[in-house]
Every structure is written in structure tokens, then in C-alpha cells.
Image (cartoon, rainbow, N blue to C red; front, side, top):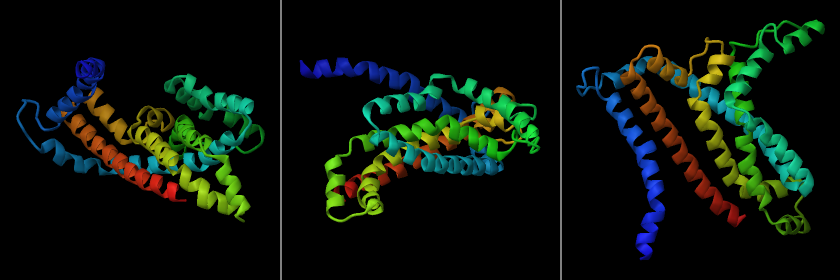
Length: 273
């Protein structure tokens, strides 16, 4: 009876996974290894060598954006975890507030702000410092990634830090550790699982994004997401688009595997610390 109940409870998840994960994955694999006539071929995989630059800049921009969000998000998460409860609620609401709006709206808003005739350039012109070209530059694309995905770095780190036992920090100070050593030997090791989760949650959507680069890149910067979108919607080359998607999926899975390995090791190290 318990086994039947377990099967019944899990069945919606199994059906959902089959329809929206497994079936689309097989469709992508099918298109990646077939031609327009449905015949098996490796031509789509071989053609990927022409898009190495798109993969490199996608991974590069994503790594830069992830590092910046970590540098900004880590101290913010720490301050959040140490703030009084009422202050925490207000600050958390401010962190979550941008996420209440659609990513497309947020990105389009920044496109208007950073435009040559936008608010920022008008202010710079009044100060005699402008106009400055922001759109169509790597900096604008990376800024868009940082702005849109920063909460995904803050929240997991905050969640881990908020669960830390303050008595451990007090004991470390009583044993002679200064502020830096408390952070290095205790806070940092214990927060690594949250850091790894944050890195994963920022890097994965950054490396596969296309709307941010389209709007803030001004069509001058082609990330791998833009290339896939163009092959699918403009060129109607579903086979090449599927092969690009498949390789991107492999890169993401490898990245997540590496992050999980680090997370496992960090968890053990944190307990030892």
C-alpha cells in the first residue's frame, strides 16, 4: 500500500519530467544528428567549429559577470544575515524587488537609460562628461547580466549565512581570532556551499542568455544564445541550432558537475573548520 501511495505521489513529477525535460532533450538530440531529410549525420557537429568565438565570449562574459556578482553579493549577503530581523525584511524586499518585474522589462528599461539620448548620458552631458557610448559594448552586456542575476547570488549565500550558529563565531573570538581570521577560518568555509549555489545560479542563465546581449549589445555582440536564436527563428536551421543547444547543454552540465564536486568538498571542509 505504501509503495502504491509513493508511486501515486511521485507520478505528477515523473510525467512532468518526461514531457518537459526528457522528450525535448530527445528532440534536440534528434535534430542535432540529422539533416533536412532526416538522415543521420555529423555535419551539424562538425559545423560547430565555426562558432568557437561565440562559445568563448559567452563563457568569458558569464565568468566575469559571475565574479562581479560574487564580489558584490557576498558582503551584501553577510550584512543581511547579521542585520536585525526587521531590517532584514526590508533589505530582503529591496533585493527581491527587481525580480518582481519581468527580465525583458528590466533589460529594456536599462537599454533606454544607457542609450545615447538616455537619462544617464543627459546627466553626463550636463556635467560636461558626455555623451558616452554604453550600448553595443561588452561592458553593457556584462552589466545587464550582473544586474539581472545579482539576487541569485545573494539569496543562497544569505540562506547559508543566516543558519550559522553565532556561538561558533563567539567561540572563535574568545580563542583569539581577529575579525579576518574568523572570516577566513570559519565564515568562509561554512558559506562555501551557498557560494557554489550562487555561482551556479548566475553562470548558467548568463552563459545561455540572448535577450540581454540583443538589447544592451545593440546587435553587435553575438553570444551563443543569440546564435541559437538566430538559427532557429531567422535561418530556420533547426538542425544546426539543435547542435549548438546540445553543446551548450553539455557545457552547463559539466559546469554544474564541477560545482557540485566543489560543493561536496566544501561542505566537508566547513564541518572540519
